[in-house]
Length: 174
Length: 175
Image (cartoon, rainbow over all chains, first blue to last red; front, side, top):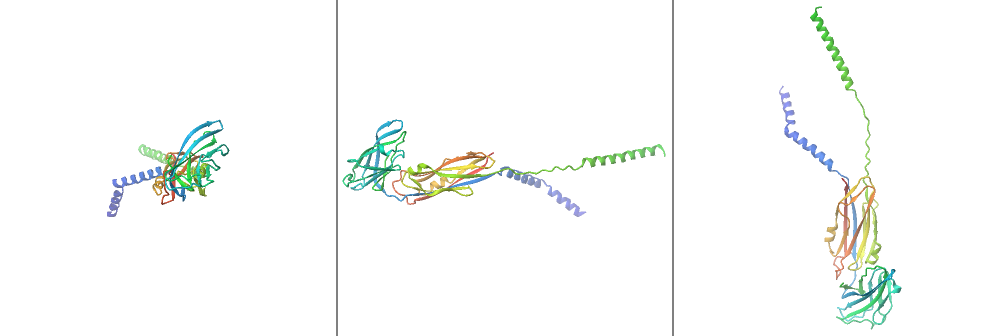
């Protein structure tokens, strides 16, 4: 008889308000867990970039558009002036190179520097080689200026980039 | 047999019939009905990177691939490795993400850009045009552009010359 009473007591305790609340919370937790379980996927894009080991000179360069000759529906001509300020020391420039838009048409373009000379275009890089030592020898704190008329396919957004003097990158002001 | 006894017997018979009737009725009501069903999960959740391509313009913006860009066999990652030739150089890569499953997905977040850009050298920065909340419906693709740029304002070579970034695209099923 005592055991039965004890058992009943136990059962009564099991169905106490506290236990009922706990069970309700457990069920609610499970429902919320199921509701928030969603499919997911992570994708990764890994990039590595390495800066080239280049030399940067203390020289500076500015360029200006002297005249836009307009286009004829196929080609467009731009007359550009480049000013390189020598901030370092008396220099003999043996080679000048710079990048322009890759739609340049070599055969219709020309560069005037000192007495004029040949230049090459490789991809979008123009390279001018000094044929004689005395051609471009800007003294320190002087400016070497030259002009060029470049021909591009129509609607070009002109720029000059990556200008190097004797292989050293020149800081571009504009 | 008196009348009272007769009535009693009649009631007993009626009750007996009633019990038998209820038993039959209960037996009828508790007839087992079996419904056989088979449930198949037809959900396909399959989000992956299908390609990564270097922009043709990289050749004219001072960026050359040190290693050709590639996608892992499982389609869950893509990598590129680029050399930047001068301040102002920019490398651009096109990444195509495909939802080859039958559940609509949404880009819940894009991680890794801020951490990468905060690391040295800070003049080299990564961008991606992905935006959290971008949807990727079932059986569709999305194209993203990833760029890495060496700032044109640098007038010297940074002490640290290599920078890595891991950009994470977190997709979840759309509501």
